[in-house]
Image (tube, rainbow, N blue to C red):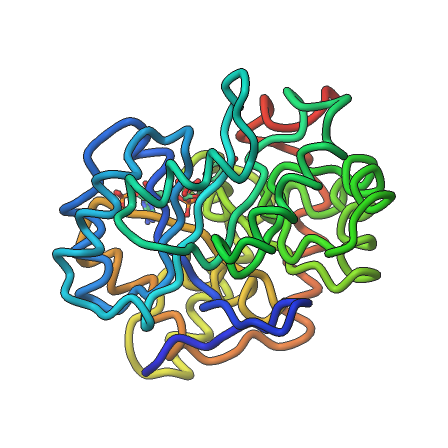
Length: 288
Ligand SMILES: NC(=O)c1ccc[n+]([C@@H]2O[C@H](COP(=O)([O-])OP(=O)(O)OC[C@H]3O[C@@H](n4cnc5c(N)ncnc54)[C@H](OP(=O)(O)O)[C@@H]3O)[C@@H](O)[C@H]2O)c1
């Protein structure tokens, strides 16, 4: 089944689930993992300058044999070296990736750039206007950070990629309201955290109950991870995940075939999530 697409506020479309080359692959050779991801059906690859592996992401893309036009490639602006701009930095990324444009270019972090977010955003617009990226967006931006760049933006950010899962859902409400107002797609990293990094919370029994119901409805296996990924998909959230295992790569993509959660189940996940506030990537967010 082809991966379903999300429409961004600039009219482009992005596959709703992406294979990431950070976290487990941070600063490591990503080539083999990327080949496996693409050969099993991932078309959206999420990289970053900071991951120090754009060259091996590019090598994996080339070795996969998949035409560039059938792939959606994201990279992120890291710490700018003196004299560099978002445009010169993406030129270097494109050289490493071995391609002549990316689909999505994000400012990776707001916190180290407070005081110069407006300038950076103007630079992101320059990169887009030069045809080096189809879309531009941000990552780890609070509502305040977004409001700051919106003061100068002639192009609204298309995506904000941040830690999103039920244990931060309530705290994210001011940011998510702004996403709604400007039609910014919410992208989730660390989405499986309640299951893989923070077991023992109020979601555990609920996710298991929903998993069992979906498995009966489907007549074949449904995993707990698929319950959370299906929840994100139904909310219109772009999921960025990763795995070192072929079976898990296949499981992630198979989420498309899992039956939908009911509106009550979606509400129950948010109610249970609101009982515990927990961030698993706290350094990417202002102190709370
Ligand atoms: N913008 C940012 O600042 C930022 C920050 C963090 C991440 N990201 C992006 O998001 C991508 C994904 O990040 P993430 O690792 O946080 O994604 P995630 O989807 O929350 O977690 C994926 C990890 O969960 C493990 N996993 C999945 N199902 C499991 C199960 N049933 N039991 C045990 N472990 C299980 C996988 O391990 P296995 O390998 O064993 O399958 C994999 O390492 C990164 O690669 C990066 O591209 C961006």
